Length: 569
Image (tube, rainbow, N blue to C red; front, side, top):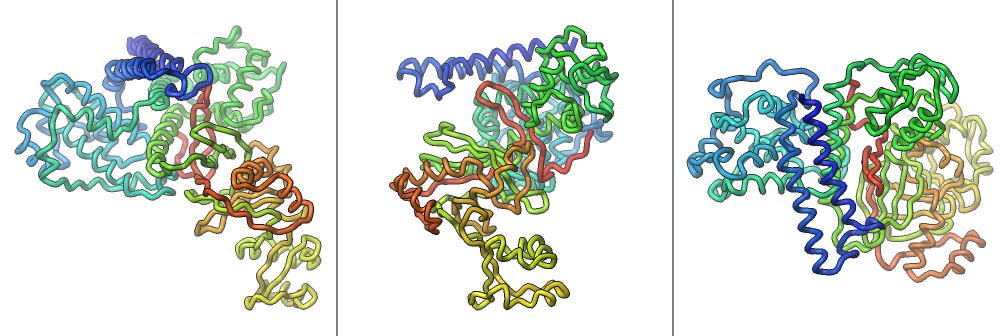
C-alpha cells in the first residue's frame, strides 16, 4: 500500500517540476527573458500553483515513512506526550505567555506548517546536523501528528531548527562549503521579547519557508530525489555489495549482472531491461552502464570495473545524505554571492570543472586539475584582479621541501634543466655552482628561495590568473596538459590548472581593453607582464558533489576531500 501511494505522490511531484521546467522555454533561459510582462505574471502564477501542489501533497509523505535519517530506531522515543521532556522549557513558557493559542493545530495552515517543519528536520538531519534534530524527526514520525497534545514537541523542534539555522549563519565560506563540522554545532537559542510578541501562528508556515529558502525547481528536484532514495532504502531486498571481480565487458558472462541491472533500474526507474536475469552483458546493459558512468564522472566505456562498482554499491541512504548536504550548501552559497557582479568564475572542485558565467548564463566550461587530498585546494571567495602573461613561478616552501629538494639530492642539474633561479633570504641571486650540494644531500637544509623562469617548461604555463588570498593559490595554465585527460584530476599542490587557460585569458584581456595582437606579441617574446583588469572578476571555489544539469540529469561525484567522513551504511 505504501509503495503504490509513494509512486502516486512521486508522479504529482514530477508533474510539478516538469511543468515548471517547460515554462522556461527551449533555451532554459529565465522566464523574464522569454515572456512579456503580462505573460510573465501568468507564468509566475502557474509556477506558484505547482509549488503549492508539491507542498500540500508531497510533504505529507514524510509522516508515512518512519526513521528516515537514522540507521536504526532510537530507544528514547515516547508514545505518550506526557512522557516527552521539553528541550526548551523556559522558552516554551514564554511563548505560551504571549500566545496561549496553539501554534500547530486548529487553524487553516497548521498541517502545512507541521509538514514544512518535518521537511526542514529531514533535510538538516540528513545533511549532518546535530543529533537532536534527528531525534525530533524520529519522534514526530513515530506519533499521530494530528493529536494536539504534541504541541510541545512541535514547538521544541521548531525552536531547534531555528537555533540550528542561526548557527549556520555564523559559518564562514569555507565552513559553509565543507559542512564537515555542522554535527558539532550546538543549538542554544536566546530570543528577545519583541520576537516572542511578534510570533504569530498564522505566520509559522511562512517563517519556516523563509528558513527553507526559495522553493525553486532545483529544490523541488532535490526533495523528490531525497524521498526517492529513502524509499529505495526501505524497499531494497538485496543490500549486499556487488563483489569485486574481473572487468565485465560487452559479451562477457558474469553472475553479478542480474544485481547490476537491479541497481541500474533503481538509479533510473524508467530503465526496463528485456532480460534482467541474463548472465551475459548485452548492448542494452552496456548503454545503461555508459549513462550511469556519465552521471558519475567516470570514463564512459560501458565496462564494469572498480569505479563503476563503487557507485553501484553506493547505499541509498548515502545518496539521500549527499543530496541533502548539497542542497544545504547551495542555500548557504547564496549568502556569499556578490550582488553586483556581471561575470564570475565558479570552480567546482569535486567535478574538476571551471565555469565562466556572464549575466547569470554559462558562457563556457573547462576541465581543471585541483589539489590532491593531502594538499587540498582551499574553499574561498576572491576576485581576479590581473592576468599575468608569461609568469614566473615562485615555488612555495612546501613544494620545495617535499618535492624539489628530494630531486636535487639525486640530480643537482635539475635546477638548470627546469629553468629555476635561486635567491638567498636577502634577495641576492645565487648560482647553482655556489651551492654545497653534498652538504644539502646530507642535511636536507635548503636556505634558498626558488622561482622558475617563464618559458615552455614553466609549471604555470603561459598564464596566471591572480586573486588575493591567504593561501597563495591561483588559477593558471600548465605545461602538463596530459593530466586533463584523466577522469579524476586531484593532482596539484593546491592551485587550479585550467585547460582552457588561453581562452579564459583572451576573454578577460579583451574585456580589459588588451588586443589579441598585444597578447600574442608578449607570448612570442616570452615577456613577463602583469595586466590588470578594469573590473575584478569574482571567483568561487565551490564543493558540490551533486547537481542537476540543464536537461535535468542528476550528477554525483566523490567527496574528494572526505568532508562527509561517512562510512558505508
